[in-house]
Amino acid sequence: MLTLLLAAFVLCLAEAVLPSQGTEYIQSCMHNLTEGLKRGSSRHNWASRLTELEQLLAHSTPGKEGYSFKTNMLEAFVFSITAGSFRGLNLSSSMPVRSKGQVSAQLRDSISFPVELMEGMKAQEKQKLICICIRSAGMFLDEHNSSVLNNHILGAFLHNRRVGRLRRPVEIHFRHDKELDSSNATCVFWQPAGTGSAGNWSREGCETQHQKGIVRCLCNHLTYFAVLLIQAHDLSESELQSLTYISTVGCSISAAAALCTLLLCCVFRCRPRDDTTRIHMNLLAALLLLNVSFLLSEPLAAGTTGGCQAAAALLHGSLLCALGWMGAEGFHLYLLLIKVYNIYVRHYLLKLCLCTWGLPTLAVVAVLIFKREIYGHHIISTADGYKNVTMCWLTSPSAHYVTLCYAGLILLFNVLVLVAVVAVLRRTRQQQQQRARKDWMTVLGLTCLLGTTWGTAFCAFGVLLVPQLYLFTVLNSLQGVFLCFWYLSTHRSKRSSHCSTSR
Image (cartoon, rainbow, N blue to C red; front, side, top):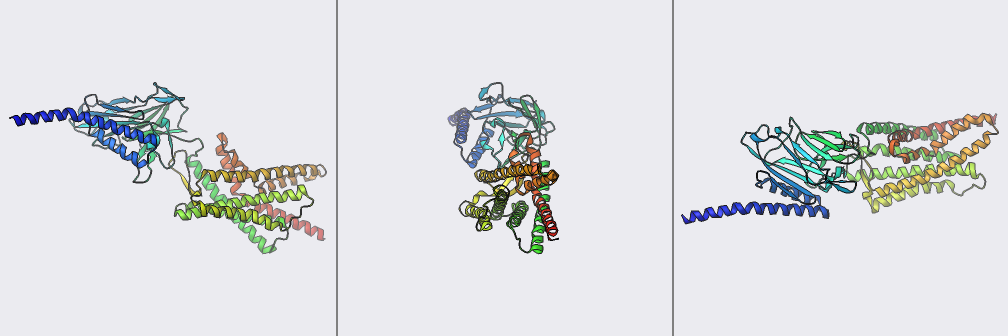
């Protein structure tokens, strides 16, 4: 009898102590997870700790009002609910949202669970509803490092049941003080990936509604939810598809035109006799290489990393060479029409080739030898964040900016040369009024020859973004065609003038 009483006393003592110890352990786990987020621990560390926290919450024993746990970055709720008596639940986070740099007690996220959450269960079946509020997007970084509203994530799930395809959705309210609409914010949920790889955000099963100061997410399942912020410079899927199509068609036509022009030059003239024609041919060759490498970039992105790096290096090098020959065209035009006198340069074409073919090739080879990770897979994101185009290109922002500076300097020089040429044509037009139409055709041809249309790349901002991209794509993908027409027209005029002189 004494043994039975002692055993009963021990069991009662255990029931009194274990919940307290479990509560302390959960609080300790949340504290460790919070500290890991502050220190920027690896994705594997916080993922395992979050899973541990979920298991601890699922095995806790909440009272009638449930349990709640809180740190400065995490908040967790556990509710014990019975299917037959469940009439829905509204829950608000006690973690305020920052408004214009200050904490606002009025801006609190919330989540509402419908009665249908327990649909299909027996009336006496009990479940534990776990809700976790996280104020750090560092736990849920995809490969694009996407931003979420206020860095807030709300998660909810049942302990022993997977919830999906609810007739009435779970409603989550994310409050804010920003100007948001369907163009720059959308409701998403987190899809975890396998070991060693990042997960991703998805919109499937979630509807987004915008009200003043509130983003309403209506989702038919339970998981971790957030509002994905869409960058203003991202394109829609349809815009990206149309631009890709225009680029592919334009570059294909330009490559064919450049190749035909080079072949015609070889067949009919064997070897160009003057430096001007030789420079034109080198520019066409560089554009041919650029167009071909661009067309190969996207297909090769689906292959091996080494193949993609080689394709990216070829594309980068051909772009640098093409820009270099556009600069050579500008320099040659400066010598012919502006400087005019004392323009003889020894080994002139050889020096131009060393600058325009040699230096870019040397730079690309050096990058491949010493820092080849600069080349690789480059992802062009769309506004929805899920339909992206991958190509082989630069992966380093610093290398991208250096290339832009190189292009900007060449284009600035060529624009100044073009302005000086227009001034020269205006002076000569005063003497011969009939040459006006021919002068304008010359200016248009030189604009293409000097590559000044590439300057539209520096207008990619604000409302001009999409029109500028279409203009840039059309003009520069067809540059080889324009140069083909320019060369044929100038070649024809030279032959006609030569024939008239010989007569």
